[in-house]
Length: 307
Image 1 (tube, rainbow, N blue to C red):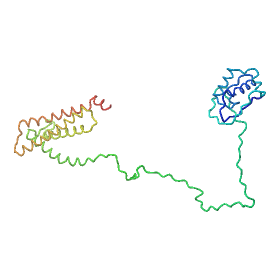
Image 2: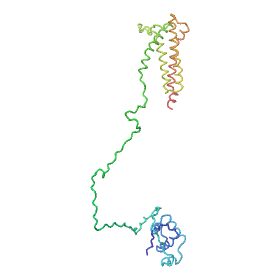
Image 3: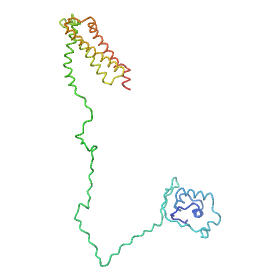
Image 4: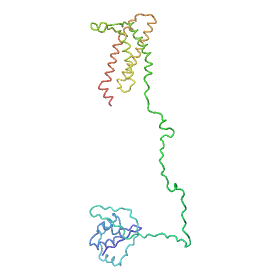
């Protein structure tokens, strides 16, 4: 004897309504059916099938109840209507079985075809003269520029360019001539002159020591100015370069003033205090250059630069 099957209802059927039919199925099988069997027979979800199975195990069928259900003396079978089930059955494990689809297909009502009069002739289709309208062409993608007002070719270059250095060289040339002549002239007034640096080795070699003033003072001023304005050195070295560059430029300006004032006054020998200050310039330049190099190459400076 096969167990009765039910179709889906437009309204969800409760567990109490399905319990008599589930007991009848249990009597047929000789035991409590599995959850998947309940899902397959009654077209219900996994959650409702689990609840129905627990109800069968908790309250076994009373004597004569199944017989009444079979003979039809009890409550009649529940008429169910088809409704989509929104809950997916949770089947996992060895006892998972696929749910069979409904055996009876839904009736499909076809629309009545229009009846044409007996004497009417079928209208002939109008000739299609426009062939381009039947096959629409695929529209080509149009790429819009990011900035409609400008084109890529005419867009200005935003990347900054380093200015050329040749104007600086052109400006430095007359300044170098004036500074060189001023320092050499001041050196002559303060005791600098011709010396032989290699006596006994190269006696004919002679150097005017006055050239050490423009080379030492002005070269260090330019180097310290470069270190100060670079911004890529430690703070201690940058501060030292700043003040030493300003001091070197100030000493250069004072040297030029002193030379031109003494030349205009026809002074052939500088006062002692000017001679003392000028004679200390090579030593001062050497000390400042060595100190700045030490600050730039110290281990602390490398650690600070790599942070």
